[in-house]
Image (cartoon, rainbow, N blue to C red; front, side):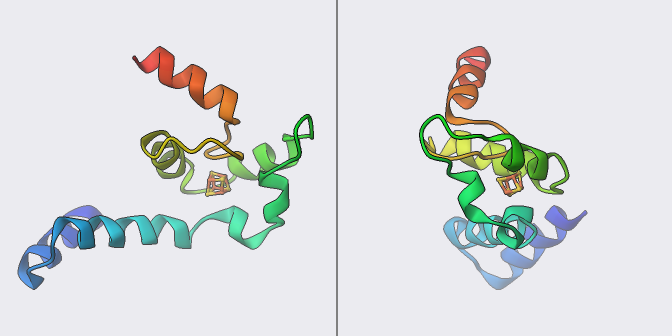
Length: 96
Ligand code: SF4
């Protein structure tokens, strides 16, 4: 529903695709649970624990959007959508 409304609004407002995606991106990031916690937990030192970050991701409402963003943008560092860099690379391979 929300996406439809955004699309209609964008078409009516003569927005470019970039502007439109910028808006959608912004929307999920506004709900990012990690932004309200300790961001350092999401970028642990090499060999550091990722447990706390993953625990927060599990409760995050925009986990899917976040993971999708990280996969699309080839994010190399940190925990995104509950997955570490290594786990994201594995998932990407599986997805082909
Ligand atoms: S899924 Fe995790 S990393 Fe992504 S926005 Fe939510 S809390 Fe942050």
